[in-house]
Length: 99
Image 1: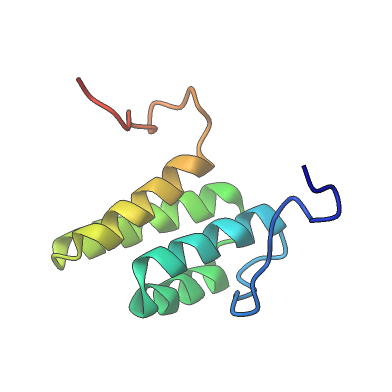
Image 2 (image 1 turned 180 degrees about the vertical axis):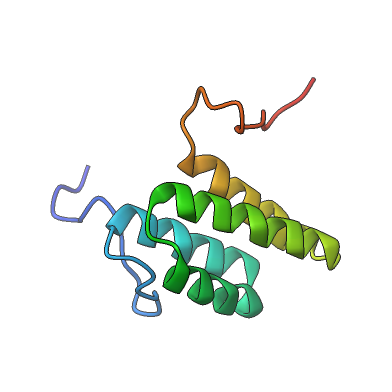
């Protein structure tokens, strides 16, 4: 284990979406996975969301919009991000695996 590295690795091309390093890492991961259009959408969300609940609701809204536009991969990325922000026992949290 390399103890010299920070817990959350930063890349040179990361955006500063939030002052919270964990939330910022989540947003950058979603932006890298989903693509450039989604990065712009997350930038808009960053200006509006303040609390983790606001971020979760914002990601759910982006997921619904992306799904309605046929961008299913982006919708799944947004839904996953929202899911990671809600409590594990929350009724809003959907199971990720179904039998």
